[in-house]
Amino acid sequence: MTYFPKWRRATGPMVMPDERLGGGASVVLGLQHLLAMSGATILAPLLMGFDPNLAILFSGIGTLIFFVAVGGRMPSYLGSSFAFIAVVIAATGYAGSGPNPNIGVALGGIIACGVVMAVIGAIISATGTGWVERLMPPVVTGAVGSAIGLNLAPVAVSGIEGTGAHTFVALLTILTTALAAVYGPPTLRRLSILLGIAAGYAAVLILGNGMGWLPGIDYAALAAAPWIGTPSFVAPQFQWAAIGLIAPVAVILVAENLGHIKAIGAMTERDMNPYIGRGLIGDGVATIVSGMGGGTGVTTYAENMGVMAVTRVYSTLIFVVAAVVAICLGFSPKFGAALQTIPGPVLGGLSVVVFGLIAAAMIRLWVDNRVDFSDPRNLVTVGVTLIFGAGDFNVTLGGFAVGGIGTATFAAILLHQLLGLRRAAPVSLPLDEGTARHH
Image (cartoon, rainbow, N blue to C red; front, top):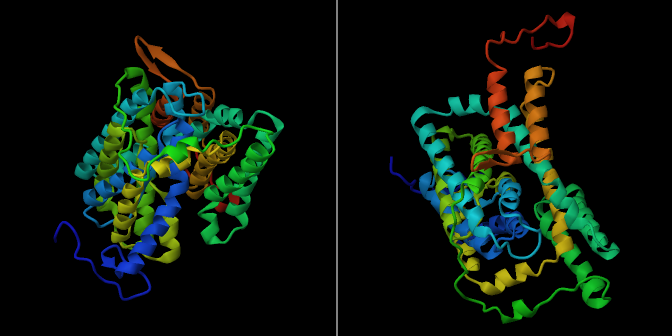
């Protein structure tokens, strides 16, 4: 078997990963995948004070790295990961608006996280996934993910507080995003973030630029930006405090990749387990490369999995098209300057929605995996993890500091393993004695 498949022409209604469509259809579907990931991939860097142009550029580069790592046999797009937002804000002291002056410090931690992912991927390739699934079952990964969302709550609330007009725009953004996500047809649901941005942006043009009730949008930088140019790359700085905060995010990224790859396997009815280790290596290397140039950490995207589920087109060549277009957009300063005009109250409203969904999605993970909360082991693990994360519990050992997300991550993993020592196996009661319980 060759490293890359020999893509054959698709003939059925379902296009498999090793099949291809015509050139025109491939371009259209590639652009659709680019649009599906763009809302979140653009929003994440803006919330951290990163350059969204670089995030788009490195999402394209990262997707190509992933494509090569898995031999072109597993469809996926890599975009900005929201799991980094809380730890990056904590590590850099970002105020919440404008460029982040301490990006270099965050980049060092992002690179360290990528190294951890790549190492875990290499170990999985050699040993299989059993050990990592035992170490990080859904109760652990869900607890850490929820802690990340709750840790961001103060940032989200501060983003919507302000004058009456400021708060109105933020709430309008929240409501528009929610209505599109709940009541819109499938196509609009995947664009709910972009629709929220559009509604809030229009409100600022009316209330700010038109009526002067809040600061208007300044287009001076957009007018001065050239259409084509080299992005402003940023060099990383390596500090142990930031690395201690950011590197544990690898736990979430590993869990995301495991879940996404298994889901793709289920959708395509193919065994994708042999590519889990290689996928983690690809994601880890892509995150390292992104961090080296000033981009965000990246991960596989559920948004693009949704597009695949609707279109039933899983050809990996579609993602090459999307990646190439993303790279081209990354070399357009005009595109980046347009993204920078998104107003603060709009970003504040989106923060409430997105950060809340980070926590809520983990609850769905528990439900889907039928996590038993009648088991005290699971209750204690989740309870302690959530308080450590939401309360931003920090620990300093010498010159090494671990923030709330780091302490929550370590607590979840260690507590779950410690509380599982010398326990009796779960015992199911007879049906007439009621619902089965764990002893």
